[in-house]
Length: 322
Image 1 (cartoon, one colour):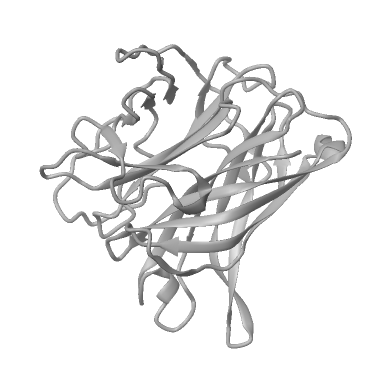
Image 2 (tube, one colour):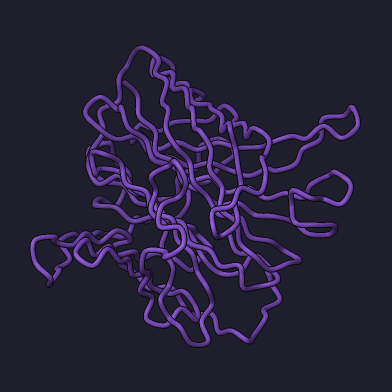
């Protein structure tokens, strides 16, 4: 989500373009060619209290028999192209990022133990310093990209994209536990700066009752946050993914929140939403995005950047079930 902001310098807001948010490219030669095209999805999908982000897909209506891709509805990011030969990503529509080409970050090319790749835009003059996290599953069927900048006194520009390239077959019985990694970025309203976050993701799915909708819940535990050199700054409270809903196309939506104990009183710190999509012949893979905001209720608000400062965290996760 993008909020009003006070820029450190004047900016122009560009209109987003249509296109395939995850163009794939060949890896056998130095010349790469886009190989995937999509058609814009027009259907709005609401699961409980959560409306899924805008999206594109290979069908006009989300379906278990087709790929699904979604991107931040109010964000600046819709088109992400990966060049495997050069190990770069190109992100369209970000203001003041030059040509939009992102190289692997030269300080922290991989986000801690997650295995997710970290990129930075390579414009060296009058740029806004954007950082992007890219995660791809072992099967290659699911992936996400998150991009933000800390160069504004508000949350700034950026966005996310997550995708299932293939199909899914949803079981009609049983329960499954999905585990994996999460990686995110924190930016601030009332201060500049960007931090990275990591966590262990666990998500439970009740396939026997998904027709009743309320069939997904989970947690992010072992949450840590780092500066841009990878130095550990501290820990964050467990994020609870409240019981959410799942659609027949394998898409998931729900709310997320964390609490801090102030004195003896549990108090909400962060709140927001999570979105995900299942993939595979046995629905054993999931990719998703979490977007939360909050102000630390503790004196001095150390976890949200200081007194009077709020924080927004956007991250992606990839989890699998045995």
